[in-house]
Image (cartoon, rainbow, N blue to C red):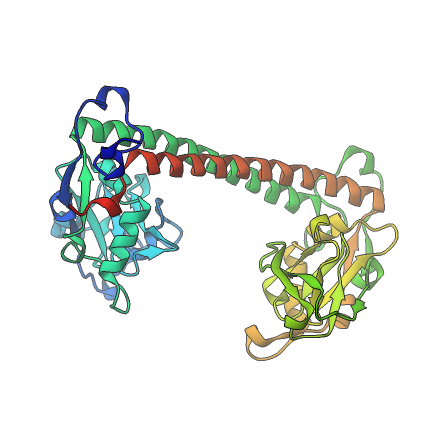
Length: 424
């Protein structure tokens, strides 16, 4: 590593045509860009349709969020023209702008093209490469410096004045654009990969709606050929499909135990860590086996249930959980998908008691007496295999996405000089 690299004067990785271009220029953020703040529109201005209203909730981490649309009167488009944003602009959240060490900054997409900028959202303004500045603001050390500069306010608010004196180094615009083009290409790959995953998830959701009977029906709309003449699905109580299988253990204070929990919204069984028996306060614990069906009694209203994977064989949970197994001629993988059906989700709430939802307690016996429709064991397996194959594809594509993001992160660490060394 050269002395210039060590001192943060040039990046570790540089495109060939710029290797003899000299040191990056030291400057302050206020000379690189400014933040144009939106207008304080009143909530009473809101309309059902008109010009899109770009609010702080619409700005995510490197992406816009169009899930909660808001609108202002169409005549505001002319009246507040200077607050309009266009496709390709970059906007940044100005209140609580940093989440998990990442800045809430995003490129205005086609949905928000021509939207009006609200007060706590800012637009980047620069005479440098706008795309380069966007990626500069994704570098970890700079984000850390920004976070330090806006600390002390509750909530933390961002403005050009607060961060303007932070020092950075930037290259000439040709090199800026080369870096931006490189990272933009990776972002396009990330977007395409994300869309592929979302398409697979949507396909799975659509399949599940057809592979299980609709309300008032006894057979599904979509059935595998070998089961089309198999007749109606059979009404059974949950207790005829699952059986409670709580394996109590006596803990040794010096023994290491793997603890697990189950995430909300069918998020799966995950580790809570490994602890000595003496450090575990709740002494009533149950041993888990692969393919157990685990239910969190206090979180099941949020659909906290799932199958114990093989990697957590021998882990333990407290008596705040219910541990069940599939009875003979019933497939636990099928049941895991079945449990995600809206009617089953509703049954979790119906079988829980309490006034405050976060403190509701699941009445397992009531739920075991709930009746639903089930197919034969063979059809259960076929459905489970079909949906599992899609989940395997989602997992594989998600791993590819993680690899792309890791590649981008590694590139950025090498394409930008170390910001924390820009002090001289």
